[in-house]
Length: 388
Ligand SMILES: *Cc1c(COP(=O)(O)O)cnc(C)c1O
Image 1 (tube, rainbow, N blue to C red):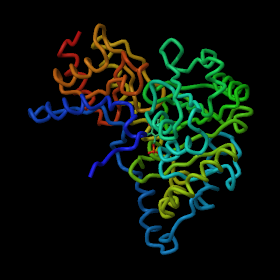
Image 2: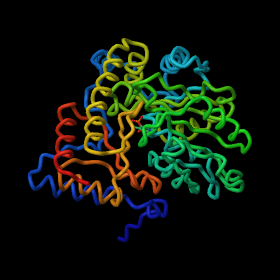
Image 3: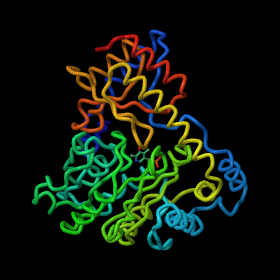
Image 4: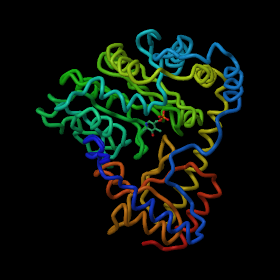
């Protein structure tokens, strides 16, 4: 039989990490002690009080049946209370909140609800790859918004041609940002709301890193006047509470947009295991002290990595949020050539920036998801190798 993939798979952009994955295997096979700063996945466990709540909930037969696709009322109410206390944003838990099987699930599905073939989605570059892939799966056309250091890694909305803006359905944004670690403020979000109004574009703001910060707490897009008229915000418990393996997130905001996403979900999945939602309530509203400790842990790691990279001659900005460091590659290297050099010369894995989109060329991304001692070891190796 001739097994042929659908066009939507065949058209996917080339997987740009294949080369580095292959090189990683090769170097590891040589017995090199690799320091993998490529992985954006917390290395410390879910907080114990959340795990205990899950153990208890898993024993309750009430939670063993099909969940509702939109989430337990108690979970959605908890999300609404958390939004009010954290951001001062009021949400109707019945119509303005939907649970997600990790925020990636919602980000991947939202285009199916709103983007028709021929429509355009506005997608940041570099960016989390799912905005682009979800657009392509829906038959839409991505229009990439370059994020540059000069503009603080915020997209220039005025540079979007009128005919593109006219065809645009969704505008994806993500602050604090993966991979650049940039943070956005009120003034930018106000411009976003005005742009969305003017062109009738739905804003999808991904706030997965809102709780991983080292300065003041980042704001929600929904704090800005009129934001709820034009968009939604995606949230995740993954990075905030070390829960990447659990698959729990949510989307909040405009009821029409949340309802559209819900329409896809009722037809594709049957929601999120209710015991996980009970644990999610514990995460959002239980003891928050471990979270403050988590931030301090990342801050200490950041200081080690940034200090070390600077003393090795890198021109690198210390992130105010996220667990990423976005490093300009020394000339004349490309992103992938420099990632390869790091790997082969010092056994340090960094992700080439162009893997997050063309505008990521000229950078590599390192993560803070390894203990301080390993980061120290990485910077010592880099300093010792005189890479440039
Ligand atoms: C990690 C991440 C997510 C997704 O997390 P889930 O585990 O699916 O909730 C979403 N957006 C960005 C930018 C991320 O880095």
